[in-house]
Length: 359
Image 1 (tube, rainbow, N blue to C red):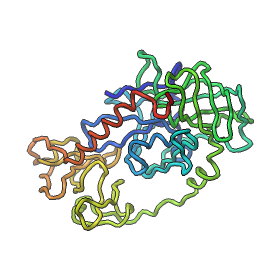
Image 2 (image 1 turned 90 degrees about the horizontal axis):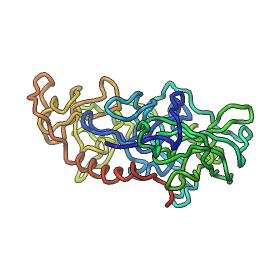
Image 3 (image 1 turned 60 degrees about the horizontal axis):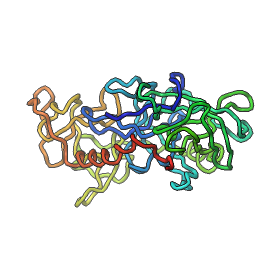
Image 4 (image 1 turned 90 degrees about the vertical axis):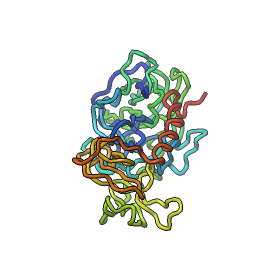
């Protein structure tokens, strides 16, 4: 089981609804664990700000989802809801060595009814050494008795302010593994708490210092242009049951977050999930046993009545209707197992060490 806690010397943060967890998107509806990658901050009804290094494992084209709620782990009963990430971009000036511009933006597949965090616009916040700040995240507590996977908060104090970042020391809390991308909040000149920075790095022990990217330095060339982008028009989608034969030319033609990708040896691109080979989607399901031999119950959306459907790889006969299913558990396609194996090798160490924390 993945082990993640939140904010060293912190307390629970049940009221910070705009602070979300970033996860690897699940491809199956049963038997696939939640993989917490980082924390993020909702800055618009359909936009999340997080750290660029949170996308290092799967890249900007990887499959992600966010969790809105106070408790993600332990499974199997997270207290909140999930939303698919439709698009991810990193700051073009991101430097993984120095963590300069360590920021990324995520466009959600649909807006959520949560008030976004106000951004620290120029003139609204005065950052200087000695200023108190509050960090929120789903990261590690360094306390075996603390509840795992819960959104927590803690107090920091700014120690050094630079043009594009600021450093903070424990007061007494400190950000840690899994808090990357989470918000650092300070009081503005009018007394309102505002999003001034995002957690990027710090010391390995999570005791002495946190390095945070300044939000006001990202506004003009990164955040504001992204927020102003028109949404991609939604046209008619290809039918889920015809994806083995129907080709595509863009993601806009693909249903339920599938991507238009070239397939090995194929003459035309197909709509598919990165974690699965090409195939068709059929009846609504809740477990693999309903999907026949060679099929799996695949997750098109993170949640909802129609989120899970029987996936059949191309070249295999479609499964019988759910009421006629044989009861035999289907085996997933080779593409899924390869992806899961890769994800475990890469993500396993991630939950044991902080991405971006310098040794």
